[in-house]
Every structure is written in C-alpha cells, then in structure tokens.
Length: 197
Image (cartoon, rainbow, N blue to C red; front, side):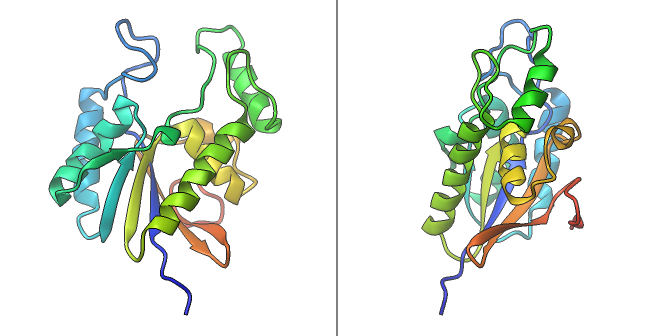
C-alpha cells in the first residue's frame, strides 16, 4: 500500500507595509494593521484543518501571517530559509515590472541583481518534496511569498505566469496534493480549472 502523504497548504502572507517604506528592508517588512487582522481571520478559517506543522519563510510578513494559527494549535512556527521570496531587483527601477514579466516568459533570465525564475522554482519545489516526504496524513502549512508561490504553481499548471501573479491576493491559500508522482492544485484563488473550496 502506498504511504499516505499530507496535503500542502501553500500560503501567501497577509497585507504587508509597502516595499520601500522607510525603515524596512525586504526581510523585515511587517504586516499592516489590516494584515494582522487578516492573519487572525485566516487562523480561524482553518479551525477544522488537521494541521501537523507550520513552516514559514524567514521574512517577518510571512511568519506574522501564520503566528495566530500556530498559537491556536499549540505549534511552533518553524523557519525554512528556502521559502524566502525570490531575489528581485529593487522595485524602484524604471522597468522593474517589464523585467519581472520577462523573467516569467524566460525562466533562465534574471533581472539585474535578481534570481532566475528557474532557480527560485527549483528551490520551492525541493521544499515541497522534502516536506511532503517527511510527514504523513494531515496538512502541512508553508507560509511564503507571491512570486515564489506563483512559480511553484506554474510548475504544476503551465498557464500560470506573470498575469496570475498580478492578481494574487493577500493572503492566499493554495492546497496542493501529491498524486501519482506529480503535484495537483486542489484549490486556491484564480487557478484555472480549479474551484475554490
């Protein structure tokens, strides 16, 4: 009999303070007041979920998003460095959006001072494999970031790309399941051919 594998709950953080806000870098931007309220609502929304572990990117906005849920469940928030956001150039660059769009069309293109989509995608898919193999029946929550999550989903559903990233809400929850050796997107907002549950 095949082993029972966990569902992966891939979560984009709640609303953070804007990039470029004085006093904050990419890693330590916190949630806004609205984002903190979203994190509390998110925690309540998963009350019936058979949650085994809570993992997060090392970035503050991701860990803050799942801390209320972890507290409700008596679980620690464990950091996985490879859940960090994709390394991108500063958003103040004149053609930042154009550079980002190009990187979704050409997975081996890296904007100046950035990480290729392929490298970031490989990193996040490795996390999914390792975490899935480590745990049995239940759900494992991974808190991460919009660009990295879009790349993970694009590896499963090739129609997902830059336009999908533009519409990704905060927070957002995607349920993934490993079936027949491949990942399937079970649910999540804006995914083609997937109903939100």
